[in-house]
Amino acid sequence: MKTLYYITIILVILVSNSCEVDMTSQVDTPDYVPKLVIMGFISPNDSLSISITKNIPAYGASEDPEIIKDAVVIISDDNIQKELMYVGNGTYALSSREFSLEHDKGYQIKVTTPDGLQAGASCVIPAKIDHRLSIDTFIIEKKTKTYNYYDYDLDSIITIIEDMSESKARLRFNDIPGEKNYYRFAAFLTVYYRGEPSNQTIEFDDDLVSDWGKDGKTIEYTSTNTFNSFYETADSIILSCTLLSVDYEYYTYHNTLQKYDEFGDNPFAESVQIFSNINGGLGIFCSYEKEEYSTRLQ
Image 1 (tube, rainbow, N blue to C red):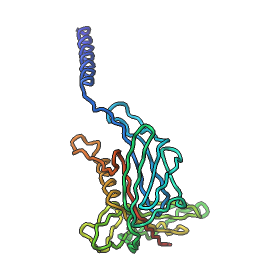
Image 2 (cartoon, rainbow, N blue to C red):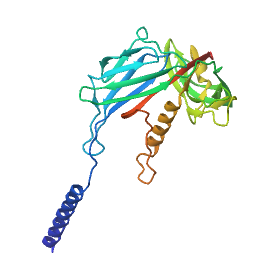
Image 3 (cartoon, rainbow, N blue to C red):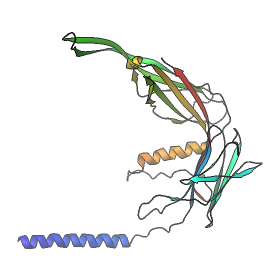
C-alpha cells in the first residue's frame, strides 16, 4: 500500500508539472516594442537633468531598464536650443550658465538614438508667485511624565517629574484665484543636539493636492504625527517646509503613480495606467516652482 501511495504522489507531481509547462507555452505574449523612457522634472530652482532609459518587456525575466549612453538630448524654447551632455547612469545634464530655465515659459525636449528611436514632450514652468507659505505649531495635549533613577552618590532613588506637551504642525499657503492650481508640499523638524542635527518628517494625510473647492483661499493642512516638548533640551529646533507649485503633468503623473503603488499588487483592483506625456515613448517631462519657509522654535 505504501508503494502504491508513493507512486500516486509522483504521478500527481509529474502531471502537475506537465500541465504548467503546457499552460505557459500556450500563453500569447505581446511583441516587445522598444521605446525610450524620458524622466524629467525641470525648475528654475534646480539644476537641469534628464534621465533616458529604454523600456523592458512586460513579460519574461525581470531586469533593470537599459541605460542609454549615446542619445542626442535637445532642450529648447521658442528662441534657442541646447544639447544636454551625458554625465553617467543614464542622466543628461546642462548647467544654468549654458541654458537658463525661466518661470512662466514653455520648453520642449527631444531625444533621438543611433538605432532610430525618438521621443519628445513639452511643458510650461509655473509662474513665480508668493503664496505666503508658513508653518507653525500648536499644542494638542499637556501631560506629566514621571520617572525614577538611582543616584549612586546619594545612594537613593531620585524621582523626576517633567511636564511635557504633544504638538502638531499647521502648514498654510494662499491659492491664486481664477485658475486651476496643483501643489506638493513637505515639512521637517530639525533638532540640534551639541551641534549634530536630527531630522523628523512632518507627515500629512496627503502631500499632493489641487485647489479644487479652495480657489483663491488660504489652504491649510495639519500634520498627522506629533512631536513632544522633550525637544526643549535641544540646542535649537528648526521647523521648515517646502511648497512646490506644479503643472498638471507633474500632478497627474504622481497621482497615478501613487494609486499604482497602492493597488498594483491587488489582483481584484482595477488596473491603474501611469500617466505619461511623452510622444513616441514613455515617462514624464514636467515642471515645478519651489518656495521654502523655515522658523526657529528654539
